Amino acid sequence: MRGHLIKVIFFVLLPLTNIIAQENTPFLTGKVEISIKEGTFDCDLTLSNIPKIKDYFIRLNSGMNILHIRSKKPNDFLIYFSKSLADTTSTGESIAYYFKDNTGKGKFLPKSIQFRYVGKFPVANDTIANYSRKDWKGNIAFNQNSVRSDGRQSSWYPILYDIRSDKIFHLVKYDIDISCKDCKTLYVNGNEPIKAETANFKSDVPRELTLFCGNYDFTDINDTYILNSDFSESEAKNFSEMINSYKKFYADKLNIPFKQSVSFVQTTPTSKKDGWMFVSYPTIMSIGWQNGLKNIINPKYQDFYRPFIAHELGHYYFGTVKDFNSELGDMLSEGFSEFMSLQLTKEIIGEEIYDKKITEKFNNLKDFKAKPFKQIKSDSEYKNRQLYVYDFAPIIFTAIEKEIGKEKMWNWLTNILNTPTKFTNYDFLASTLQNTLKDDKEFNLLKAKYFDSEKALENAINEIETE
Image (cartoon, rainbow, N blue to C red; front, side, top):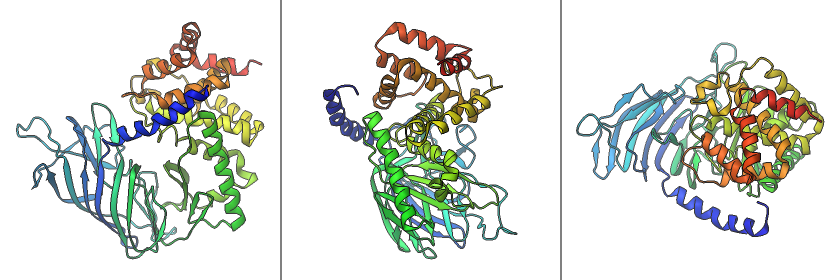
């Protein structure tokens, strides 16, 4: 956003855009009973305000055993449900359900659906004998002291998927009661953590229903919640100040406010060796046996952890302000979040660390043959997702930034976030750059060099290394 007038218009229109988008957001109500000692879920949930979709699946975790599914509107009756093996975009944790119409060949979708189901999951309460071989993001993870679950991948609640538009409705408005008699603290993404065994959680803003319930304490300092950490008071203050400085950096560069209190969760995996972080806004999860949150403020580990946190905060914009789909959606979400992390690293964390990160990416890509963006027809064509979305894409974006300058580059990112689209595909990526540059000759040169060329990676490295 270059001019003051444009900035004012944007802030007026953004709430209207959000209101329109939320009109089609499913609404989840009901009750959930959890036992962290037994590893159980007992759910009575109703999904309403369901958009009119002709071809769909409803995903639910494969460990959930269904008592019944009931149509509530327009008519009240138990539904015969079918399962499908054709949900290729599912990560394996969930089963895809649908309802056949009267012909048996098509599908029908009620306006409101009740789901009654229970699930029992392993409880890893002993790292010597009673633990799992592997832990991962989509795991519904019980470790006797707590339960951790994301929403989208684990699908612990019913998630609608529109096949034709490749849209996942994992972000829902909700009004649910959570009960856990062997917990002292309950947390649902989009709410403050609460000291209670039973509580009602609501959100008028669509959220992914990430859960963290168990026996732990938390702190709230300067609009940042820290759950289950052993931070001292001064460490918590330093951590919060760092997070707020990163949020301000992105908000200033993009001219889009970072309207979110962020909650950081520290917990242990159900396995011996796994450790990672993931984000489902406003929650950032740190899973590991060493206190990853403390490492973030430890100068000894800042080369790794601080750019990583900058990347996760970038997902507020590339993943929350705007959701991404289609064959390039994953690359755009991760690639631009990583690019922003690199820019923040260069300007705030340290230029030496930035140089180190760039060199590391060059080394990672040494033997990688990346298909140019234009040729990607499916995310399976990334070949190596880790290298494509976290290394190749941000290197391409870094080279473009060097050619067009910082101001135009940040304007391009803002344009991507503000431009309405059904599919965030190649045409969308190219058109937003073209609209940002307003120079067809310059656009066509960059497009040919970085989007379409078999030598896109070579071109980008040469540009970045040129003094």
